[in-house]
Image (cartoon, rainbow, N blue to C red; front, top):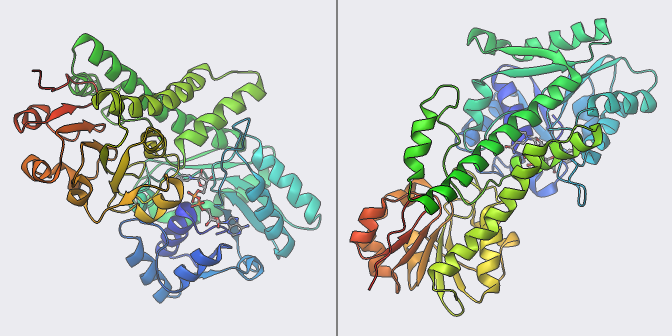
Length: 443
Ligand code: NAI
């Protein structure tokens, strides 16, 4: 497994749990040192125990020596990052290609090269070219096995997936069989759980991942626009979302209004799909709009907080609950908090922030002046306005009286709808949320 980040570490550990010997190769020295000392460099519930058990059982090892890991391996998974390229929004495949070349150089005998990273359509074929150029003598196949795990629920998602996608080179009949057999073996426990394994061609598998993430991002963006409309016409987005979600064709998930989608996948994958569409001469207009609407939305959220303050936050203290792009992760990649806090900071606010898992990952990406607090009540202390940016469960149970006792002001912008508007108003707060009537006291 090349790459020991979210996907490499979780997939590698779960494959080990399935009974396979796994060597994870990680080049980041801090990450590797942590893993070797039994510390998990990411926040993922349950992962520490699973890693410890599999290391103990001798099925899971960590190192930076790609040759040692690849020698004698039946399959090499590539799980390195594919960030957005600056400018055109395409996925940067340079880490993938570099990893493949390194692996090809040291492979012995037959090897199956599998992309777990999310890669643009055509990457599998490009990988085959690179391997042939690097090692004309090597017997190999290429497969695409995109990963659908969600941070925060990654182990369950990997062990009990809705589906596993295996794309192989269908223009190469023998190769397809060999590649499919290896992946079938690796995922054997899932057959017992009757989880579907879908076999496709390379391009199809690569596109499935982008289509899935872009659809979900579009669904989030749809409810966000409906939420804005609710505010204008006096409707309640929670009721709209629940009611449309009860229709099985729509489904209830991903219909929660938010300050915009962030994270390591949706923003970059939607951008990448629009680039793929453009290059193929088949524009992805819905997704292009999704990307634009989402970017505007994050900015609009900061403006909403400023409007709640009466148009000016200069010199005001703003308490912020939640920084990560969603709960149950420490991931700050493309989190809405980055955009919102930047706006508030530039407008002259003093920011006191707390996140249950993301304090360390937040520091490098948030404005320097932010004060990091020891808990939610500490962040509320002395605040003129309190802003909720991530819906961590522990915030839901904060009693309004406790907030009142700590805060200087009486204004709350709940940008995740975690609280009940009436109770907050009763407790004396001016309370705004998303897609529900504002609860503001008028003189
Ligand atoms: P990450 O950035 O957390 O991990 C990538 C790791 O690979 C880093 O630790 C990096 O040091 C290491 N690395 C890079 N080049 C290397 C090399 N040549 N040899 C060894 N290690 C190397 O990224 P993450 O989040 O795990 O994502 C990886 C891929 O999986 C991306 O394509 C992403 O889109 C996809 N993905 C991510 C999901 C997520 O929830 N984070 C879910 C599904 C797919």
